[in-house]
Image (cartoon, rainbow, N blue to C red; front, side, top):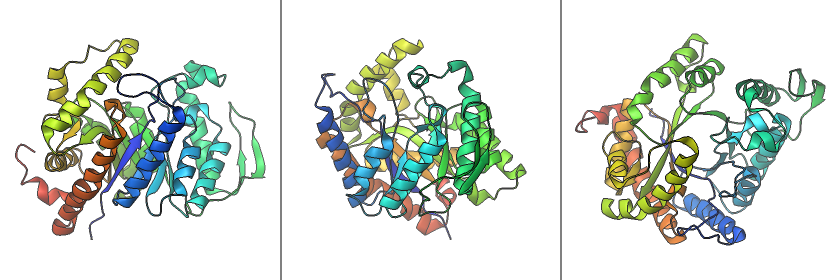
Length: 361
C-alpha cells in the first residue's frame, strides 16, 4: 500500500505588508491563526511556524502560536519550521511541544535545526563559533528526553541531568522530531545516522542538485540499521498557487524581489531580477509558483529527481501577499494540489510510476 504524501504550509509570520509598512502585529497573528484554521478545513496535512528573532518576523515563540491554532483546528498537524535548537534549552523545548501535543490531542511535531539567521546567538548569550557543537549536543539531549522520562545526561553547554523527570509527557510516543537542513553534507549524514525524518529547505537553484545529499542521508540511515520507511524526506519550498500561472507570478514577484533583495544585501547575493525569478519557476527551478496543474506536475518532477518525498510544504511569506490572496492559495493547494498528488499515489501505488509520463522528468 502506498504511503500518502503530506502537503502543507509553512509561515514565518512576516511583520510587514506588501508596501513594507508595519501593520498591527496583533492583526498579523490573528491572520495567521485564520490561515491555519483554513488549511485544516481544506484538508491540508501540516502547518509549520518558523522561529526568528528579527524585526521583520513575529514568530519568536512558535509553540505559543501553534497552541492558539490547536484550539481552532481538528486534524491538521502542527509543527515548528524550524525550532532553533542551538539557541534553546532542550528541556523547555520538549516541555512546550509535549504540552502542545496534549492540547492538540496528538498533532504536534517539531522540526529542529540551526536556523538560517544568527541573531539568536548573541541574544541568548551564545557564541557563534560554537554553532555546530551547540546543535549536536542539544539534539542529543532532546532525543534523550524524548526517549526517557527520567534523564541522565551531561554535556559542555548545560548543567547535567541526574535522573530528573521531564514533564509533561506527550500523547504521541515518540513525539515526532524532524531534522531541518540546508546544504551541509554533515547535517544530512547526522539525520541518517539518527534515523530522523529529514526536512530539506530548498529555496533556490535546481532541486535535483540536492539528490547527492539526500543519497548520503539514505545511505547513512541504511548503514545505521534504519528501515527505508523511517527515512522520510520532506521539502520546504517557496511556493504560491493561483488560478493561472501568470497571476501567480505577477502576484508573488514584487514581494519576493523585495524580500530577497533585503536579505541579499546581508549575504552578498546578486540582485533579484524578473528574469531570474521566471527561470526559478521553470521545470527544474526550486520555486513552486503557478496554477494547480503546473505545480502538481512540478512536485512530481522534484520527487522523482530526489528519489521520492513524503512531505511538501509551501512557504508563501516572501511574496508579501494580502490575506485574501494567501487564503485563496491555501484553498487551491488544499482542494486541487493535494488531492491530485494523492490521486497519483492511490492509482499507481507509488509516485514513481507516474513520473515516466511527465515530459522532461
